[in-house]
Amino acid sequence: MLRIGALVSGGGTNLQAIMDAIERDNIDAGVVCVVSSKEGAYALERAAAKNIETAVMRKKDYPSQRDYDIALADYFEKRNVDLIVYAGFMLILGEDFVNRFENKMINIHPALIPSFCGKGFYGLHVHEAVLKAGVKVTGATVHFVTAECDAGPIILQKAVEVMDDDTPESLQRRVMEQAEWIIYPEAVRLFAENRLKIENGIVKRR
Image (tube, rainbow, N blue to C red; front, side, top):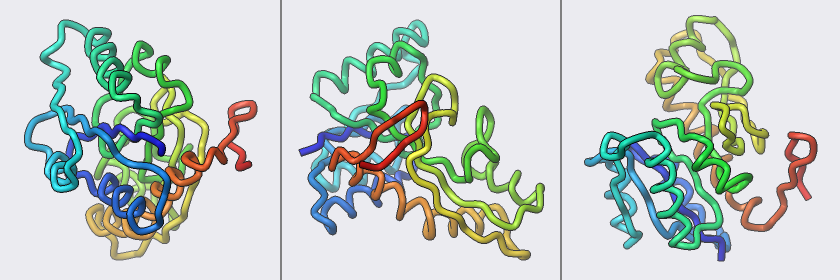
C-alpha cells in the first residue's frame, strides 16, 4: 500500500476528494498522516473523522526555515511516507525538505500551468487574475513539487470553461468540481500504480 502524508492549511476539500477516491475506487493507497501549518484547519477534522493521525506544525514555532523544513521531513520519514500531497498547503518549503522527497511530492494548482502560477498565485487570487485577463478557458494542474514554486513536472491537466458572469468564487467552485477533485485522485492512482516516469523534466505514463 502506498503510504500518503498530506500537508494542509485550510478546508481540505482536495484531501477529502483523495480519501473518498481511495475508498471508492479501491486505490492501493492510504492517507496515514496529515500535517497542518496552522491550528483550526478544517482539514484536520476531515482526517480525524477517518481516524488518521494529525499534527500541527507552525513555521513560527521554529527558529528558521531550515529548522522547519527538517522537522517536517523528519515527521514524514518516521511514518514511512511514500508520497506527500499538498492539499491546500499555503507555505513554500525549502530545499532541505524538497530534496528529501524528490519526485515524491505532488501539488494541485487551480489554473493551467504555466499560466497564472508562481509566487502570489494561490486561492482566489488565481481566479481573480483569470477573470481580469479575460481568458475563456482555465482549469487545474497536478504537478510534482520542486524547490521552484509551481514549476515541477506536470502530471495531469484538465480544462474548465470561464463563464461571462463568473465571480472569483463561482469560478473557484467550478474548477474544484470539474477539475481538481477529478485529476488529483487520478494522479494519486497513477503514482500508486507506478505509472509515472519523468524524462527530461516531462512526465510520461508507463
